Length: 403
Image 1 (cartoon, rainbow, N blue to C red):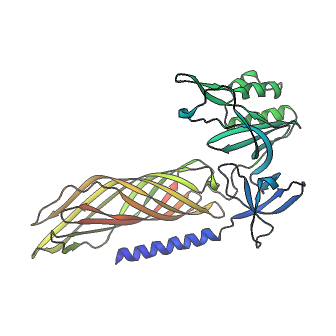
Image 2 (tube, helix red, strand yellow):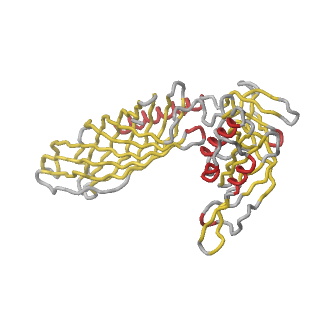
Image 3 (cartoon, rainbow, N blue to C red):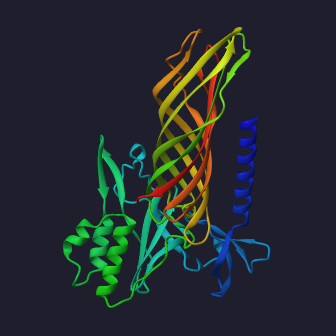
């Protein structure tokens, strides 16, 4: 009955969270420019695209029905205080970057495509970004010249030797030269976003041009880091029961509350508005209890001792609110490392080894800045097969992010 009440509570809590998430504003104030260069303001569904989009969902106002607008009818679109995408006809090399599927050709294998490129920097020299087909590519423009790709290609020309075509370094050295940029900066420039942002800002500043750096992270997210580490402590409700060999229930301990402590690492994925993350957690708990039960017509004292370190791996989905706060749900599995394990009975057989099986965990919580509160339910698991001993628990913990 106690577990049923708990499950009902968790279900109610999850339904409430779902309602909150559905009530969130999926459409944000934005604009798009059509083929006649008309700027149309309204609301666009902002999903923080992992791959560059080929269409958008647009509303003229918050109450209107949404409509899908494809790349053929978009010259540019932007989220207010967010990302901006511009349409270009480009030459793009889609050669794989996977080590097991590298091309044997050094030269890029260009294809002509019409793409919505993410605008990263706007200035005398502007930088654009593309992600799709499992690859990342960068493009740039200089003043009013046509857009050009920054060529980077790994290839395998003989045997297992892997080489790299870094034509982008020579291209930038040829066309984006300035007196304050030393030659070794071109040579050491890495093919990644942060390096290009720094370089293009330096070039524009040297050229007397202002750089506009477009916001790459949603203003509504509170996770401005790729990784967070939390210390956690709280209360744990423990339930333990066992049966006789014949299957007749002979012992059910009263629920007992204990203490647990742990540490949690959260790896935040930088897409879909930082809503998804992966967790690795280590939690220590200690449970012991003693009671008297009638077993096979004999009254016996029964004592259980169980302590372990739980290694948890799980996924988390967040629903961001205002003021750097969020509601989140978590699901995963747990691997227990038993430290102390015993079931002793005054007459019947004792057991000093519990099953080392994995089990599930489901949680929900709220976080404000560096403080979090989480309710987590751990699925029932069998600890001792001969007497069908089962253990289940749920916990309420407070967490503090140290970074």
